[in-house]
Image 1: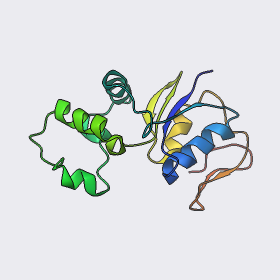
Image 2 (image 1 turned 45 degrees about the vertical axis):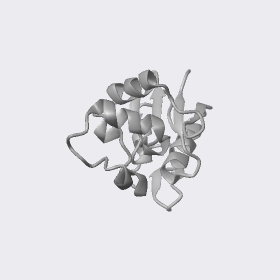
Image 3 (image 1 turned 90 degrees about the horizontal axis):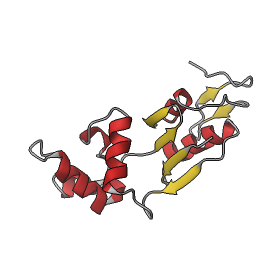
Amino acid sequence: MSVTIYHNPACGTSRNTLALIRNADIEPTVIEYLSAPPTREVLQSLIRDAGLTVREALRENGTLYAELGLADPALTDDQLLDAMLAHPILINRPFVVTPLGVRLCRPSEVVLDILPSPQKGAFTKEDGEVVVDASGRRVK
């Protein structure tokens, strides 16, 4: 089965999402999008298939968002996509693609909704939050 994660290893949410995928005994294709950014067409497809607007897929945290004036509501989707492609750090993460759909996995446990295999055991996020119990069932 094919699962792909657009991953930033420096991001805790992305690391937790990748670990949840692996906790289902799935070894995904890992695309470190900062060094291998998606094409415009792929990025547009990820955003559309996840049911998001371009603005919802834009990462607002960090100074680059403010420095580039990306909060300006007059900016078009094309302008926002241009900024995201020029500066991939502006792409919110992680996007995950599975046979069951595409999601921006924030929080990381959103990935559980689209994994084609169940969790194989307990999972606790890096911050200590228990997400999956010992029998592989989602908590909450």
